[in-house]
Length: 353
Image 1 (cartoon, rainbow, N blue to C red):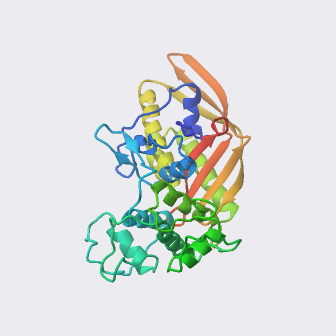
Image 2: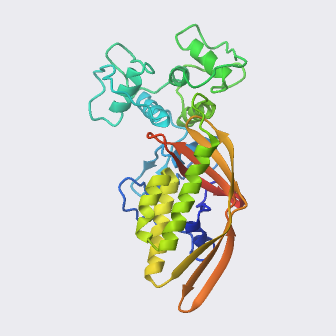
Image 3: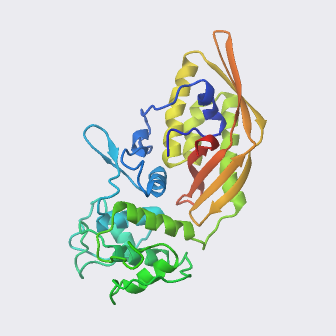
């Protein structure tokens, strides 16, 4: 379960022994989401917690905010065609210059209009008729299987044992359901029922997409490209501390981090800078290098394990010095961006796995 997990890079090591947990949500940069958006209150015990939490951290799924500021994902709610297509386009970072299909019920400027344009222009989604898309119509389980197979057809090998479900009739989505079941992307509600015409839940849609993303293998990155994203960020932060160029934090974060990690980094830097303004002196010294091992990778997402690294952090105020050596073992989660760079969107410390 996700609490506020601090990453291993030098900047946040201070928080492990000096600064109290950093929950500040006073985020100034417009492109950075407030931290509370990454802590929906209704998924902690949900069967799809991992997939939902991962999508939230990577900025692929957004929650609802009520008048009290409470954030929820409503994982058991049905999902509309517009919502699913928008999440799909965002997850794959799809782009297209084509105008796509013109639907009379998709108004220009609507939050989903561009996603519908992109997905229709790429042949991923069709309308419910020749002229209507049905953006608010709830999407069915069979429909999702069709859209996922079309969207991932060039990056996934749909191989394996095919599940058969007696309740799936001979209709357009049947071959897509079969292909998706071969890859393990979709599963039945029971061993004999798929319920293709049942409304899909938000959690089901996210889980299907997560499974598909984990299987993408057409553009697998080199390990060195992934580890460089972490090592370069560490080197940059070392430089900032050495030169005491604290005003460069946000630029460095924007270069190397995204999603929850970016929001946490920015929020925590505000807290640290406040302490420095109060007279704290901060020194960071590397004790041992972290060793990075790529444990999982696909076309757009990767997981890297860090071990053996440590830093000595020293803070001084009013002639009182506090020093501690902190290990940096943990797990990094990375995401490929639209400029082909890789950025960290989450970090878990080993003891909090």
